[in-house]
Length: 119
Length: 186
Image (tube, rainbow over all chains, first blue to last red; front, side, top):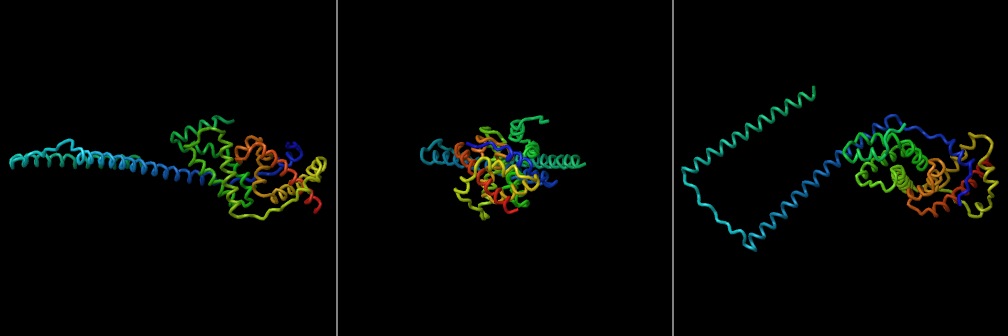
């Protein structure tokens, strides 16, 4: 069906192809890296939305089971006595203090690591 | 020497190594650019569209399943991008009567493309190509310049193999009519 015209083929081979600008590769790769970052952010966002949606669904199911099915029956604990309240507060404040110290230490080491990487 | 196959680089990119995309870019940028450049005719537009083609390819790479070769796939993106761009601009293309095409014999076609001076012949060919509609220009360029076979062209353009054959036959005749006219004018 297609006649093979060799002279036409040769003629096409003689057409000089133009060169791309020197910065073409760099420009494309720059856009590609920006796109990759955007795709990563999109994936993270989608993951977060999925987690939130799943949590809401699970909470909804739990809530509906509490309301309509009535399981499990919740018995609220009796309020602790004033002397025990002081003890609970003491333990709670120690836990909070440890949490703050842990946060501060992590922050300090992260900054130290970043400074080391920049060097 | 080509060290690794396209599939190797694609797998690496899919695994998160974005730098591997540069290797695919180095392999296909000129071919894609030369095709687009001939379809859209404007250099700046061609550069921009070539960038868009590679960006589209990068975005779609996670869904690339290797049903066809990467080369065919990237040409398909390039063809669609370039044709869409030309449709937006709607260039005026020359219409050639069917009878004019059927008048041309195989010998005449041979003589027309055999012409005298190589430089003038190439110039005439480029001028004749410029007068073809973008989709027809793309088809003939894929066949003669990019040396794609009919099956590959069918995959790239999304038309059937028999349709590609018919189209190529008609475009070739049209091209010879244009070349003959240009030769007579000079």
